[in-house]
Amino acid sequence: MGKSKVLVVGGTGYIGRKIVKASLAEGHETYVLQRPEIGLDIEKLETLLSFKRQGARLLEGSFNDPKSLVDAVKQVDVVICTMSGVHFRSHNLLLQLKLVDAIKEAGNVKAPG
Image (tube, rainbow, N blue to C red; front, side, top):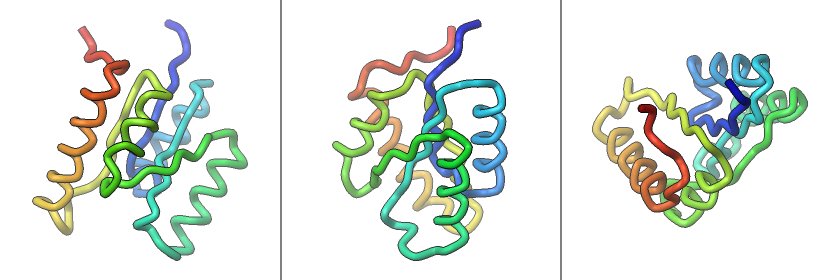
């Protein structure tokens, strides 16, 4: 199987960090969505910089800016969303639906089948 261009959304979370590391280890071109909403969360910023040093590419995008999500999705073949819904389930579900809309609009990510 060929290598993919993988976008991880939620890459600074517990599961997201593992997915990013695994994707890089498998040699996939790996992208991580860098959202301005993280603000000055030092731990998340350090995680993103660590990914960049390991070869991941950071893509800026915001759930408040649908065009930025579409632009990010257009650069990849695979989108993996690891955002947790532990604290704000309904809010994160709405955000994930925005990501689904961006994937549909981009038109380049195909469902497995």
